[in-house]
Amino acid sequence: MKRKVIFAAALSVFLCAVFVVSNAVSVFRTQAGGGDMLVKAFGCSGAAIVETNINAYASATDVFLDKDEVVEMVKSLAEGLDLDYEQAERVENFSEDYNQLSVIGKNEKGYSVVIIVHSMDFTGIEDGPGGFESNIVVDVALGSDLEELPHIERKVKDLVEGYMEGARTNCCIVGSYAEKVPRDSIEAIIGSILQSAGASEVERAVYDEFVSVSAYTPDIGRYVEMGENRVNLNVAMRYNSFEGKTYIWLGSPVISLEY
Image (cartoon, rainbow, N blue to C red):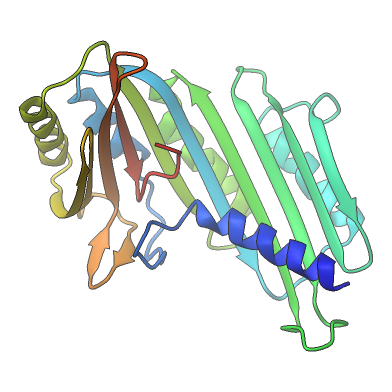
């Protein structure tokens, strides 16, 4: 039982981690999407599109889902995202106090879709936190289909909120340049992106070939808190010497992809 509790807690932390940036408190104040703004901002970068990603997370602490409920929920989410549940890869773990089902596959448009639903019952655990916890995680990778980002973001959020209120979405765009971009040009690119979004710089990190800027714009209705500041736009650039390319990442409210 103790081992199961540790595993469940670790999984919960992992799922939440995509919404947390270092030294920031992940608090979404409103749920207006940032996909439209990211598409507009990326257009100012001059980069070639590499990848577009959306993920959503929702949690409920007042309900425990049994096996049938978890399966039905995942099937419904898969159908809403045009993913063939029967053909998708599935990972499951069902017991009296822990139920989890994950599906991974490509939908009708070729988007990579991951859906995870898990539910925990802590009431029978001695010295445990008590109560219940259920979570939904949906991740959709659109490849180079940039223009669909705002629409899919809204669709994913609506699907998740059909089961749990307060769904939190995070959008990311990855682009590249076919050469090493000089530092002054990097600053100019980031500056043009912030200007297009009406954003003000909050914090930056610089490590050799890597630059990351966290910013805030009132034109995106959601944000996380970083100390006493609000953040809802993240821009990073890094040169990859092995590929001879410079990469750019845009995220709202933060970058949730590895970079």
